[in-house]
Image (cartoon, rainbow, N blue to C red):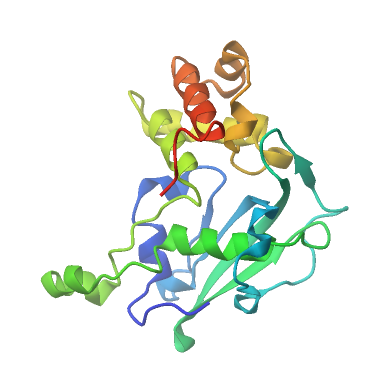
Length: 232
């Protein structure tokens, strides 16, 4: 996938603390290598609703499988089929592009590759014009800093913001890890709104240890499922 000439994977990923929250994994570059040699990876639950989107399949490389059995395909109320994949992002500095690998348990469903690419574009803000910012901050331009990390979806960012309220960051880390483990697709990905909209509030509070935030998270999930919140 092509990236701007001033793009830095490490600066974009590590710009904001949410990159360290589950299900994200950042593998820093060795001490004697450039920081952009680092690798970002995470599971992602993609829906088949992207099947009709203009193809971006040429941006992806699919290597040997990382999983052991057949494809994980789930169907949840209110959405199309979902497939859990694992994405790995590396920067190819000599070619002004990033390499995106998709690993899955089996053949990809229609639209999953496109969903993965659109998710990467959102996470790294690849469509954002930073010229005005760089004109004011020469050091930021030199470092490639300005594309602050975002989650693949607005819902994930909003839930993580809720879990970041009135606690130390260690508790935020624990809550997001448990949300993925207890309620995410294949116990890996971050939960879709439909995974949380109908969860019992006490069950969510206990299993994800989110305390009073359980009510807020469930109400937010229902708002997304019912179309009351329109993601930007």
